[in-house]
Image (cartoon, rainbow, N blue to C red; front, side, top):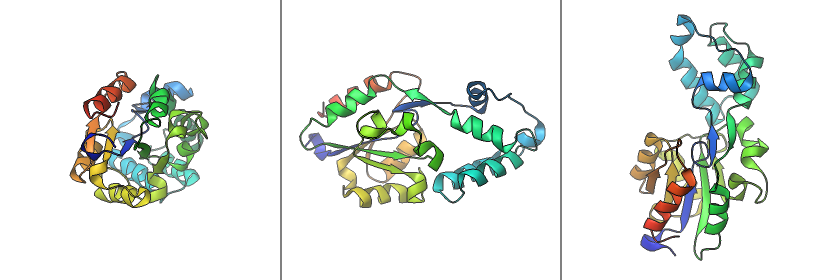
Length: 216
């Protein structure tokens, strides 16, 4: 068991283990879909955010999400273009994170988890969620996704659901996320939580934090 009773090291996926697009413009560039804007589409940003939250909760299916999101762009994009941008969102695994997770599994009394706001489409992408130990995310021993739990971060309910699913107490969990809201949500739930800078070397940041807890 690590210092302070930490037994579970839990990670967010995008921005911690895998690099993702950080803007719609970046997603358009990666997918080859022309980037377009108009005032009508900008005015519906709140509705698009609410739809994205429902999608990540699993309330809205993939095909319906693409169709509804296209409608909320005011005709700027069609459903197929939305799907193409969505499919291009995951860029690749951060260097060193896979090896770090495998190393954690050699530490007595430690295991690993994943708690990600994601969708059915992204959850199934091999690059991010390869089976066995072929990828960082695939190597995690307790993977949990928002669309399967029906909850999203930073709400307290998703952290409690993770605890129920894994059997770990709040004080036993160390969590890494790149978004401050999610880190603060985990901290309010009683977890040890650390923010990761998605623009930097995420593996090194995680390793430094683990050493600070006497876990590495």
